[in-house]
Length: 266
Image 1: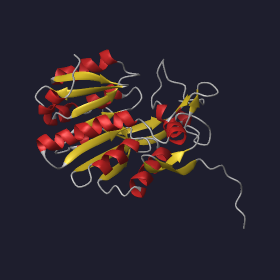
Image 2: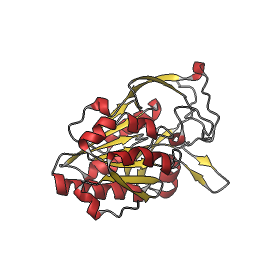
Image 3: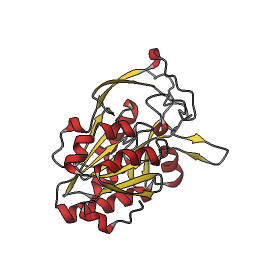
């Protein structure tokens, strides 16, 4: 029996960062030639965010140098896992990555990319990272229509970004997802906390307050939507020093020996 026609969204791509499951509709075009999106970058350039990947990789190696094997990185807003896979491969034999992604279909690609790249030192969790644990109702984009899915905001605001397709935040159109906190993970060690959660960065930091105070991880947080000032107000109270790294802020605790090896802008 012949199956009915269906559009194919997720495809395998042989990228410079490994074989990856990519949604070919993961893009928002700004004009006829310029666009953005994780899938767009991978399919048009062969790689994604290589500078950010290498910055954190260097920090992870420094943490190993000063604190020994067993390095742990948490990837909040892991998307399809480019960072997770790259860091897990680099830390084979001495480190571990915990990847968390809220969008169910994107999470499936994340888990598949961990598997297809044989990253046995990485684990994927389907959840939204927030200030409190519970259930969060989030929007559902059309993954068969173009849109920058990594730009999706789980909660609406006055400045909600247009991802390339209309998104409904009406309750009838939302779907539940587990909400967790970093503190709720009760991690015995945490070396790098990466946060890229589309305007929920302050909530993630609030839900990580005890962990940050206890373990003093390096914090890598996207600043584009939340803003440098707001993030600094939360991070600085924990005794961190900050510097800009592209779209991110990298914060290192003042007592971390790595701080002497990192350029820090107040």
